[in-house]
Each structure stands twice: as C-alpha cells, then as structure tokens.
Length: 158
Image (cartoon, rainbow, N blue to C red; front, side, top):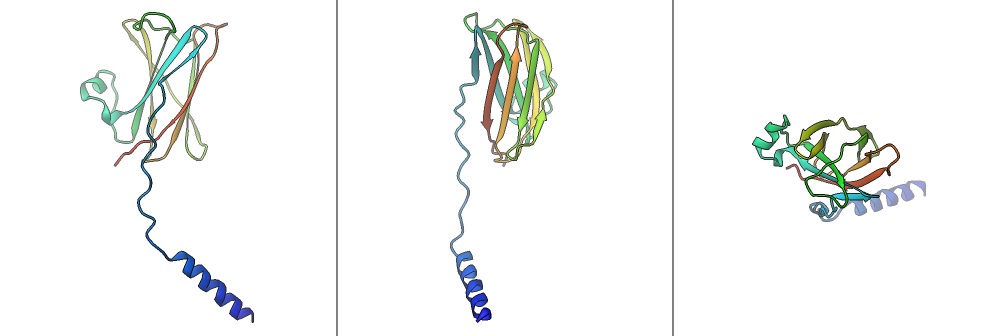
C-alpha cells in the first residue's frame, strides 16, 4: 500500500512538472519616478543613468568609466522656488543602494563644482533586470529639514 501511494505521488509530481514553456519574462517596469523630492524650501533632484548611455565626451569630462553594468547617480540640490541654475551645497549627504535581497551598499560621493553650485556623483553596479532601490538622505543646513528620496529602478543590460 505504501509503495502504491509513493508511486501515485511521484506520478502526480511528474504530471504537474510537465507543461508548456513558461515563456519569456514580462518586460521591465516603466520608469515613472518624478526625479525630485521637496522638503521645506529645498528640492533634491536625482537621476540614475547607465554609464553606457552617456555620450563619451560627457563621461570623459567627469572621468566616468563607461561599463554596461555601471550606473551613474547624479544629485543636485536647489531652492524649491529659486532659479533653475542655482544649486545648494549639502552639509550631509548619504545614499545607499539596496539589492533585491536586501543587501545594502553605501555609495561613495564625488562633489563636482560647477557654475551655479555643486553636483554630486556616485556609481552603482547594476544587474540585468534586477531591481535596485536607491535611498538618499540630505541636509543643506544644520537646522534645516532632512530631504529623503527612495525609488527603485531596473535596467536591461542585454
């Protein structure tokens, strides 16, 4: 009797395992993040772009190595109601990249002083179709509001 039950169970598992090919995975989610957050009278702008998508002249001007699995995180901070070219310096700026399985990587910033104010750059290693979440915390003045941004992206690398 036990042998019959085991054979029956094995047959059921075999039948359940058979079937059509599951097909290709669904396409990556559309990127619909606004690219900025506001806290008080300060607005933080951010973008995460594959370095391979940058024109070589721009990548070279910032000493950015272009690789298919490397993304560039760009951050600028500006007054919420100021001129579009005015930028503020951050006295605190922390960011982490969080993988799909929860591994956290602190990002290392490089400040680039440009006309109008600083831009902050960091690189992030990304994987094909694996979502990556970026969390940013910034402050421009000691007693000012903390600016927080959190969003998730995924990239096609092939």
